[in-house]
Length: 575
Image 1 (cartoon, helix red, strand yellow):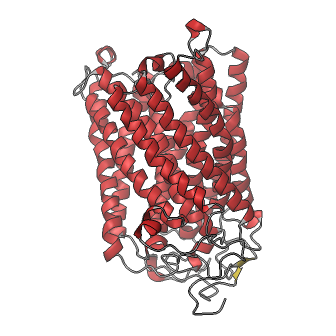
Image 2 (spheres, helix red, strand yellow):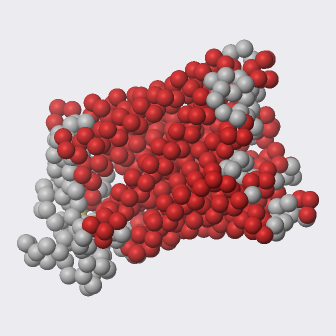
Image 3 (spheres, helix red, strand yellow):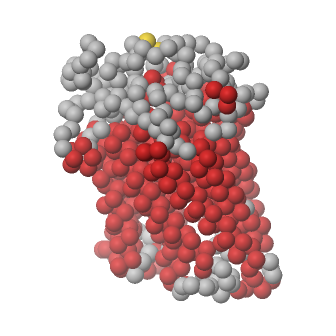
């Protein structure tokens, strides 16, 4: 295409948009088909739901300020932790890490002009706010009370609220399945010429594995939810043991999805860390193929470990042993990633930008969460720990300390590409330390409270506090420090808003990174790439010229130096 033209001709290149540029506010910002705008929509919606679900979390902590409950009834408390967990998993974490992050970064990193099916992409987003409204409407029907898993027979007493809960998560499942299909087709069919599987950025490997799980795991959840919905509405006894049903069947179907779901929102975070660490250590990623293939290994093995959530449910001892061994095995590909990341940092010239701080925090918190998971994979230990706060601590170290921490690392890293401005590093560092300290002070004490026997999902803990005089102190300690995380997220939000107008101009490539999104303008143009690039090597060798041809901006062979890296040095390995 000749210089000076505004857009490529649509319809002759498989990497083209299949639609013209939008005109008017509604088509451009509301019902947009542009993957970047849809990513922003996911981002804003996910943050709104995080505000609501996070408020519920603080109400839970305030309730536990006193052993007999401080601010709400037991029934209201059950509703709070049910909707908090449900919203955080399905309306916050999954939409943010797959919908927002995946939509913005993935097409840019593979050299595409959009996803394969833009209309389905738009549809998958607009299902999400409908699902959110449906979930929160359960309060109008008395609220759901059985936890974010909605186990029968307890959930069968929720009536209309239970039916609305099923409908809401079923809608999220539809959205996730559509997104998984769209991303799989996009990655398989729309990569830039020369981008073979072993030349893809590691975030794309993580996105592909996530899309695979979205496609195939959600079917089991949708089936379970549809059956539970029929039981709520039409009294069909799928899970009522008194009428020939099986409550344990629901657990099998739920966890066949929900354990892969843990990796649905952790694998994109793995991809983020694999992009950030080599950039700010100024070293090639260590063990590229091992990290890439371990993502697929995790995706496959995650379908074989669901029953470790069900050890106390009465499954046969030989099944318990089998699932215990497989659960240990899934730690191997995860360990490969952790050791590869540490090896990448070894002897690197590390620059502690905000993104790098969050990435380092991720290594600490997620690794610790993985270690505590080994205890829960052991049948004898799990029998003691399963109903205690030890599980709450482990789950939050994996989800908040893993998936959310990875997402928080991604924000300052790709914010310059999305807006053309750098975020404030000073505010970013304050935000990180507030979150890191608040997170660990909130959830770390839960480990020993759980080992001492403090039960989870209880609105009061009078009996436990009677035998454990320090229980009140640690619960109040956790509550105080939990508000540091609130302040941290608020400061991060303010940093993003402030930096849009006052942040330093970012340029094309402020970090000296080498993946394709850093070869085009910031923010990216509507069509992303005026000319589809040609790829002829991996993007992680900092001592070599960029492995691309046909770049729009004819940038130098080496990426731009970063305006925020120490001493403003050239970004070549060994420089």
